[in-house]
Image 1: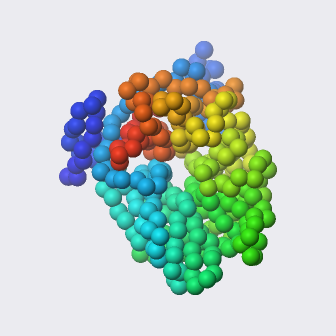
Image 2: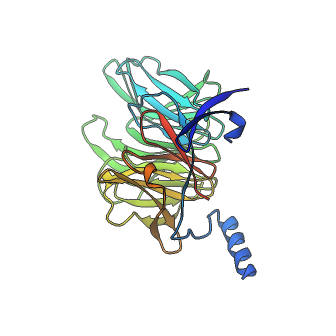
Image 3: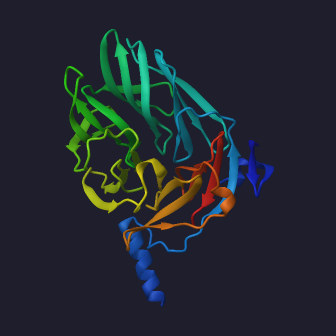
Length: 326
């Protein structure tokens, strides 16, 4: 039986993987929540409870993300290939060397995992003296991949929608690679790498989107922009919701954004060396602070994603920390 080290209440334990794993008004609210794909309005007194820590013994040059049942990240080697890795709930790590035919240099800008364990990657490459950009889909078995070269479109962030479609947001450059001609461009690709839709999103500012957050739930795709807006899209690409970001929180203070399968939205912030979690209250359209034991928010804290209803975070040094959000 596979076992792994976890930390519970500051004590290391070895456990099997299986261990990781008025009334009418209430009924009406629950039914409405299920039909809309949203949770009922979060309480202003939400509490996240620490579940366990998982030690991965990993050093992260780029901050990874948690998608479904996998942590996915990458290491750019400044050469013909970059390493894309995944880490599962046991702390087991798998790596692949990602290369492109005839490219002497390959850089990954963002990577994501699907519910099936596929990997999507976006980035740039150089073959000879010609630059290109790409959207790649790597199979669960890691032995096959579909790569679509998309220049002069430059995808900056990527995610899998629940229906398996790859979503990207980025910008378009001119043929001479001297200037950006369009910002905040959303493009969607099917399993064969075919472009399905392309749209320029109505978002203020000219900043490129590489440090924005593109995430997905069971019935929508969500984007937290660099201008501080939170936008949700239906699976066909149409916008369905838009919310202002947390008041008084600068872009540099955001330490991660996560969306659960049930559309619970959590933003991590870091201010003056102290971490905080904020939950979107859809009724009030406000971001509500969450109560967490202070020993879990001191120092560097970053939101990585959701596995089910469990929030996955890290305080660095390869440690994954989970919280119950119920």
